[in-house]
Length: 213
Image (cartoon, rainbow, N blue to C red; front, side):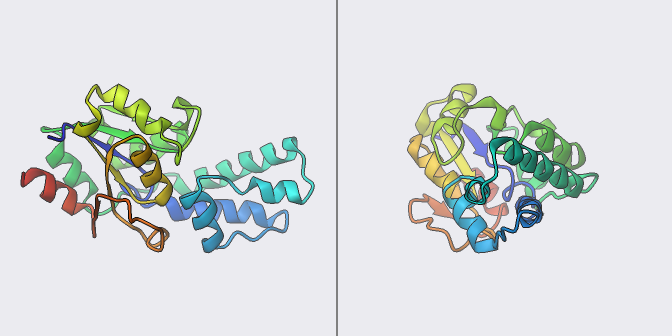
């Protein structure tokens, strides 16, 4: 029996993954590196690594790379500011599940960006806990984020369900020994989701499947 539903954020609850791509692309172009959607899918959404090795190949030092990261975060903040990027059906799904399940979010986003997005969506009231990138040492596809979430939820591994949209998120969840349902997006639909327990068409199906049991 499922007792906790652990959600990825970007691409699952809010349609922000493309904005992170645009911010990354803009900043990398300033050093003459073009990040295409294919490159982004491979390094971020499959492997879970950043583009900074391209900067090192260009001869940039770590201080310069840190400045690129700061600039990327500033651009992303600007894209997020004041706009509601909630995915259609997300609030209705959370509202239906909240009385029956522990609701956690496990995201690779920075906390400031997470809070900025959900100050507008007003989803925070549905979450029992949130883990952002500051809350663990190793990011997805490493299992640590979901192992930490499992501890936070207080349930056994077979009692937790993960909702993801990316290959790196699926890899993380399965490495942590968890059931994982995937909702592919435009950026992730060409990924390998063969290990997913279910592949869904949209977020509405999560509540339909869980509450039908």
